[in-house]
Image (cartoon, rainbow, N blue to C red; front, side, top):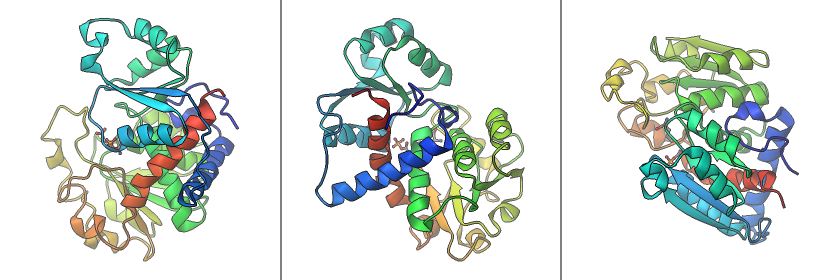
Length: 304
Ligand code: CP
Ligand code: NVA
């Protein structure tokens, strides 16, 4: 199956059915890999990865994912590219499109991705921008599905910064009809357009009260208080101690609630070691699932 969209820059570009099919296919790919039944679905296809910002999970999972699919991935840091000497994103997109079957880019400014996608004739995937992180959310919802056996009707609590991951999580909740409750300090709320669009499909509550938000939650999620694109390194102070996910706060969630974090985590910041290393944490499955969901995404996007 192929997606209707050429690119995946935000989850607003796909339908609920496509989101659910991607997750189902990711679960199948994971099972096949564990049973040594890996199929080279993208034999001889290539992925070009562009990184303006650091990465561990995104880089490794995409590269190994392409390898497992029978294809090949190359990694470019923008300071090694002519982009760093003033070549335009338009010319870069047109050139890369003549060599590669797909481009994945991690950028500061989301608008750069929009331009890259506009001028590229091959699919472009958002590997994290200042506004969205769709690939992370595919892995997160696969993980929730594996652990809870369903998505619709669950309550997800987001505590901390209303950031790029939170914005994509909002679309994920809308696509799977999960209720989302968000607690952020004043001034750190998520993208208002994502909230507005998603409220048509599910309940999205935004408050400054972490205890209210986590009450009866099935899934608890947080992320760093200082994202790579945040210049104000003192912003963390505005979140602590109220918005830290610690054992005391987790007690207000359902007993069988799971804890997710996209990683990298700042232990003692947005989350304590007692939670991230505790029995409710599923962060390593979540990190692993980046591999399976991105393989599904690449298979659904790259023309074969
Ligand atoms: N979660 C995530 O995108 O991790 P990296 O920054 O390591 O790629
Ligand atoms: N919000 C974080 C996510 C990192 C994967 C950031 O943008 O740095």
